[in-house]
Image 1: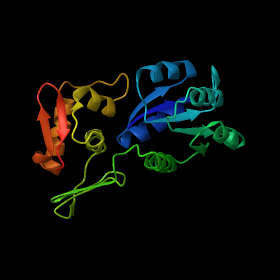
Image 2: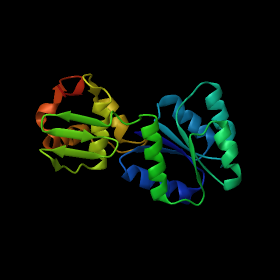
Image 3: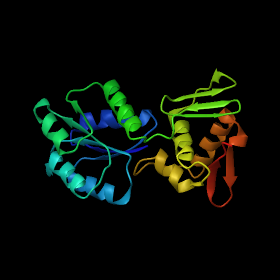
Length: 216
């Protein structure tokens, strides 16, 4: 999932970006509302992590603007306790009071993602394969198969388009943030690893277009 982090505190922003990215998400970090607007204009985000007090405005006003134009992107506000209720009333989906534990942040992201079905359908069972996307568990012949966060990101991208083609650009968008160095064969490498885990027969290559998950 691609996440927009709007936070001006460099220590908090850096820690959050590193932690969330380690969970397999692509994270774009904006330190101002102006930068956030530029990011949101070019990329569809699955979730926004929004600080309230920012150098060029108030995060709650930004949230109200979003909801007024019927932008329903889920938002978790990062705030002081006294602004929690105002943020929820403005349309936030959840909140964390600063200072917060990064493990709790992961749990809140996971909960919002499940509530809005930002992950693909929770369970697929095909032959010897069972995929529990929301719980991040994959079984083959009844044995748990570990996947890295980025392998899960590729699998999510494929499962979100069952039967349809996921282009290389769409997979890269799920894997990498703005400004990331992307090796020319990065997608191919992760798809190859994923095939070894779930079985090559479950991922078809559509030459010149991308990849398609095969779950008959």
